[in-house]
Length: 387
Ligand SMILES: Cc1cc2nc3c(=O)[nH]c(=O)nc-3n(C[C@H](O)[C@H](O)[C@H](O)COP(=O)(O)O)c2cc1C
Image (cartoon, rainbow, N blue to C red):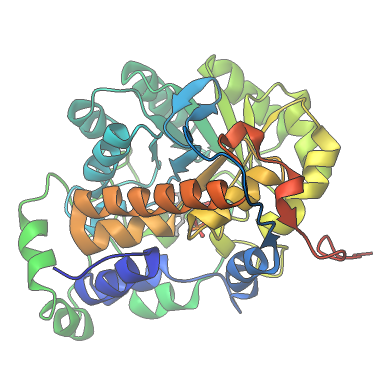
């Protein structure tokens, strides 16, 4: 067993173990991947302010996200096809999150269904909703999430149409994979993945297959989104969905101060400053770069969370110090899952937790609530002057 000391270690093992099609699916951004790259490189531009001779005993990373206790403010982001990265991937990741004490968010486009995850875990998880043209289906999904006692609905706003990721088209991404000569050649080098997958509860989109009719190709994410997602989603529809749900709502995919204000006005419990991990609008700014402007715009009127580009506890600390109350990891937990299943997700969380804790200590802080802009050195032009 290799010694794993950081998220990059998990990524290396993940790349070896998981079929290329699914590795590429996770490790891509849209078009030129500029936003995907800048999500991580912009975190690197912010530096940390070291403080010394501060009593660092009794540190604690615990806090709350939307009023729920968390061991650290780092949730697992909704990631489609997680159950293709590892057999029963959503169930395993949800259990790792539950045991660690952080929220798990199940994607609409998951392999394990809402019911699978509910049956495998003890604590409520969050459900991420994509809005579809078929409003009856959306209502049934919302009801299923209520029945499963999901404690928040995460409505994703930045994917009414799918950003193009070149590799997915070239690889013919599907769940389960279609057996072409090149996928078969690659699958033959991924025996462990394949054997585990044979015993998986599901290999198709669990929230969809058997719950809707009339899809031309239920295995293709591209076909499904093009045919079913609702391009007419607007704030009025968002409000209706929030009312239909009636519980806590997190609006995901906010990257603009005006949109953040609108989300706050609608009464969202939180917003996620996110560009979908650089997978949608290529050329958009990184999440961490727009965070200060959004904080200025909404103040305390809504809880602000952030994702996109987080690969370490230092990144988490930077987002928190700039005002976010919570963060999410997408790829960082997927690397762990693909590398080592549930234990790998736990490992990813442990790595991030340790980094957050140590970084906090060396910055002279004992609690995440104490973090502020004072802990950072931010380049004067970090926000940029964009006309
Ligand atoms: C492989 C993959 C699949 C994703 N699927 C979804 C999804 O189904 N729903 C959603 O709201 N966001 C989805 N996202 C976006 C994540 O929720 C999150 O915004 C993003 O991963 C954060 O960036 P990071 O991967 O750099 O942490 C996906 C991201 C990845 C990498």
